[in-house]
Image 1 (tube, rainbow, N blue to C red):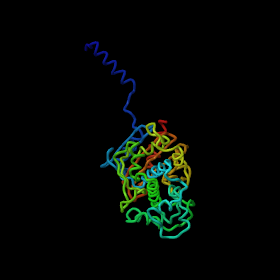
Image 2: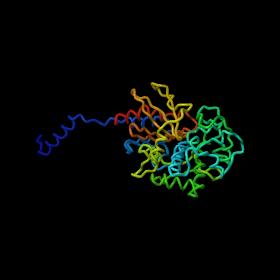
Image 3: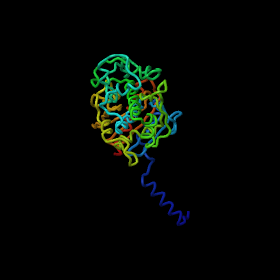
Image 4: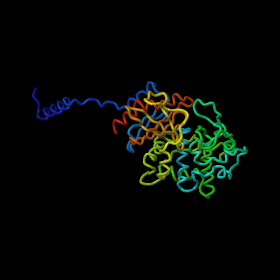
Length: 362
């Protein structure tokens, strides 16, 4: 066989390619996690997005969901509601130490008399330490006031009339009424200053600067108040922007949206809570979850390292994870409403796949 000059060159190139030992790229741990969604190792997860160094490096959607499908956030909106509140504080519309009842009196007043109720401040609503006799945490025995706040025709009056069980600031109890009262306090502060309503305020000072346009906030059943406790709708990529805002110390596109002090208040855990999201993982230490400004703080123990993480949480498995030490944000949405064990699946995925992959890139 006679080879032309061009044929010899081609053989040389092919030989060089084969001898280089190039093989198919080994799948990342992100891809491994994605594959485990398909055989239902992990079930009813609707999206999984990973950002590092402000760049989207992995995204997957499942079932009927895609990058443009809005997803109900449930209580993850509590964490977003806190950002709206902190914006109002930054603008001097209300203060952390301000008493909530005088502020809310323009809308309604409690019918129950209790000295302790008069001591509830904005900061207590932010940190779920109001002292209201209410416990809606997974596995708790209540009292549960979620229906009265979510579905009741007079949710503000209902929330103001929940009995007290402790002094404000003493203990943490998960209660949607705190978040509802927080948003109502912002509405009252805006009305006091003769400003726009809370929906316009949130859009002007948070959503539009973050270029979030495809979203829906929900109103109370009587149409008067923002449901600060949850039930808004966002696309997953826009949920990630709230995490990135925290990661970037309140800055977005060279514009300061939140003050450094507001960011620091979220980054600093305040109160230990009475359950752990990572209790089902094989960790070196006893897991502890803390709370601050409607955001959770937990640590992942990985290769003798303790990875401090902040996150939101919404029923069904809605999470925004913020991991400052590796400059990362991870978002999950899911449809495991009412099943807290399945809602913890993202923590297993974070521990086994997402964090090891991110650490390998750091």
